[in-house]
Length: 524
Image (cartoon, rainbow, N blue to C red; front, side, top):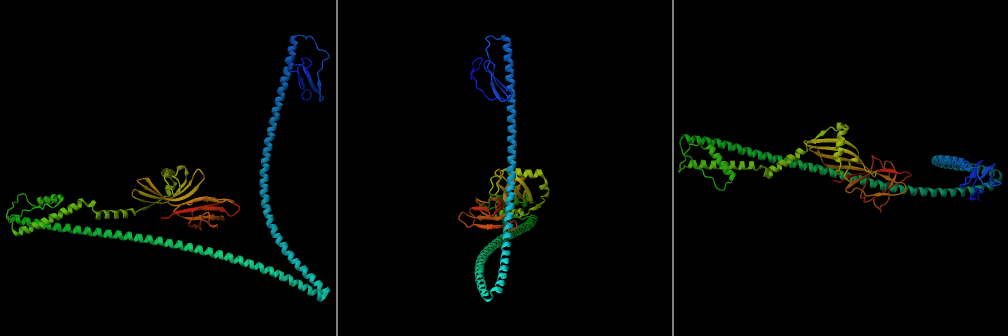
């Protein structure tokens, strides 16, 4: 359609009650909604002249203001409408979420009720079946009694035949059931006996290994004690021999001093002593020193010694040589094997003299525990990457011992990495000069989840004995891909030992996931 004032084309759109539509070009009224009817403005005559330009502009401005107000009102209503829709949508979403939660809770409740109803129904059906059998038997007996009264002997015979056939069939069914139950019982007894044999064999093997380990430890300790006692005896013998030699040397020296004093008094000339060229340099020095100390400065020697003086000179020469050997041994004692063996034995004996440390106060000292975490940072624990300080969740000192600058702590450490892998380990922390030298792992326990409808597989820690604690959760376990499935339930007091496990796979044997603990102890 076209505007009757300026012939501008326009399209009729729906309007609210009492609203009007104006021309976008000239601003004149085109149509309006009155009582739900669209009325188009058709002037009877078109004024060729306008009153004046000022009135026209005022009218146009008023109409523009009116249209602007209508547009503002429409936008505000649209905004309110959108906000109301958004609120309704959020309310619906919240109601839908609450409805879903309620439906889930209701489904769970209905599922539990259904399970309970099924159990009660089964019990009720069993009771009804028993009651029906009893009533059927009573009815049958009453009918039999009535027929006995009515039909006498003939009916009695027929009923007896029926009863005999029924009893025979029931007896046959009962015998078949008994046979099946007997076979099942025998199979279960065989499996139980086989399991008991395996368990007893495993216990015997563990006992033998324990006895062998204890016997080996005893033999080793006995050999070590015997070696230490032998070294101690040898050391005492050597010391006694050296003391005896020193005592003899002392006596001989005193005797020689007395002889020299006697020779000085009688004015006899002593023998000129010559030292052999084969004596080592150290012996020569010691000999010259000994001679210079024993012979007086004013003594004079003759070129023609007596026979008695020759014997005395030989004795003095031998004593001087022996003194030089002893002095040489004293200076070279660190290089001789005998002294080294004695020192090593004493070192081993000293290393075993550790005294215990009270760790209660250290566990309560937070600064000390934080320092331990800092010392462990970067060190390796069995099957764990170098430990990050943030992975250490807890440290508890179990015991401690000290020998001089060497300190050992038995510690329980709880670990958890960024992927959620958890482990509990027992270690020995070796300190020397207040610095952590190494960490010895005695036991580590990993916590794994046994899923319900899938196998979870992992490689065990090598060179370790493995025990399994299912925390009373029934699980299925395989020690390799082709191995038979083992069903087990265990707890911390009675863990199950695994042997020859190359790849472990676990799965829950009920409707819930289970936490299973695998403990690894290094084989020494």
